[in-house]
Structure formats: structure tokens, C-alpha cells
Amino acid sequence: MSIRNYKIEAENYLSDKFAKLKSKTKSGESTCFFVPKLGAQESKYFILGLEHNFYSIDEEGYVKSSILPPPTKPGDKQRMITLYWHRQGKRYLYREGVCQLSTVTYLILNRGWNKDSIFLEPDISNYGDLAYAVDIIIKASQGKILVCCEVKKSKSELDKLIKHFKYCSNIGPHERKSCKYRQNHPKYEMCAKYEPMYFYVTAPDNEICYKLSYNNGRIFSEELWDLPHKNQISFQG
Ligand SMILES: [Zn+2]
Image (cartoon, rainbow, N blue to C red; front, side):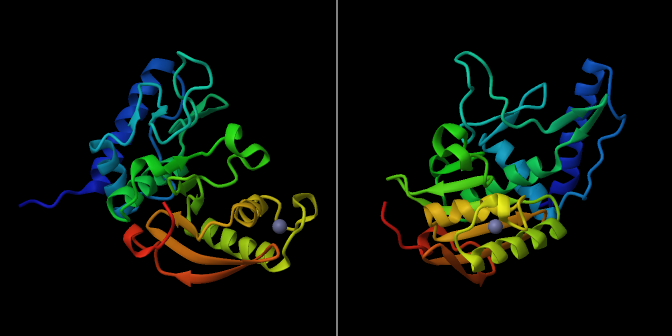
């Protein structure tokens, strides 16, 4: 039995899409750059998610999926995530998006969550000011948020987020405008408000998970290697 090279498969898939898009728009870089490089596990779950039809990428690079919010206008298509950004006449791979999709697939195929309990880019209609505060949430059937998940494009960004999350958690209630780490502060606020059991952070071939407990707006985090399998977590619904 031959072993699949998912990294090559993912690179080829994303490069082909990139080339097709470029030929349509006559603009952009000639090569699809992967910065940072795709991870082995990241590539595997990205491809498996396509094969299981958890999501698809359309001819314009937009991600179509029931895990994403529906189109804002009836009859329109989903435009929440495009894997190819277009800026100043150049096209780029939205590197973090690949890791987001890979993480979703990992949660379903490896961690036992049902696709219907996972929400990518939880949006403004549900979370107001905290829309998009985190990339992915997992909900119990009665609506309680069990896991908040944030995806970063690199290990260094992941480390920075953890440092900032711990800083905010340790202080307890405070406003974003007065926070030293405004960029990552909403992750703390989302957790403080909805009190998920876990905060799970991924980056290409990196992950870390915290079991959270709460006391008057302060958050205490116990570090775990990975998000436990759904069957190992006891929760209602
Ligand atoms: Zn803060």
C-alpha cells in the first residue's frame, strides 16, 4: 500500500486553484507561496475535509460549507472566507484559512465532534461585539459553548496569543481599549462571557489546549496536550 503524501497533494491543489484564478483575473503573483510551509498533519486534514465534503473551494476561491454562516443575502453565495486574498494587484494565499479548515476536519475526524456542533467564523448575528473574536466554536446541542478555538498561521503567533490570553485572564474584567494587548483581548472576553470548558489554539502542526475555570471574570488555565476526545468530556447535551 502506498503512503499518500498529503503535503504535496495540498500544495498541488492550492497551487492549481491559484493558477486558475490568476488566469481569470490576469493579475497577481505567478506562484502560490506557502508562508509558513504547510504542515504534514495540517495538509492531511485539509485534504480529508475536502474528500468528506465538509467544505469545498469554489472557482473564485471562496469556501463553501455548512460550518460557515450562510450568505448574508438570500440567493447570494458564501463569501466569509476566501483562500486567496487580492491586494494591490497581487494575489496571496490566505494561509490561516488553510489551517482553519484543517482544524475543523481534525475536530470531526479525530476528536469526535459532529459537524453540526462546529461553527467557523461565528458571526455578528449571534455574538454582537464579540463576533469573530475566535475562529471556531463547538456548541452542545442546547447552545452552550463548550470550546473556543483560535487558529494562528504560525507557532510564533500562537505563542504570542497564549501570552496575551494569560495576561488578560490574570487581570480579570477589563476593557479592550485599556488593554495592553488589544488585538488578542477579545479572545479573553469571549471566554470570560461564555465560559467554555476549553480554549484550544492551533497553528500549522502545532496545537495547545487549556481546560478553563472561572472566578469573577478571572480565568484559570490548565495546560493539556490536545483537546480531549468528545467521549472523554462530560457535558450536558
Ligand atoms: Zn485584555
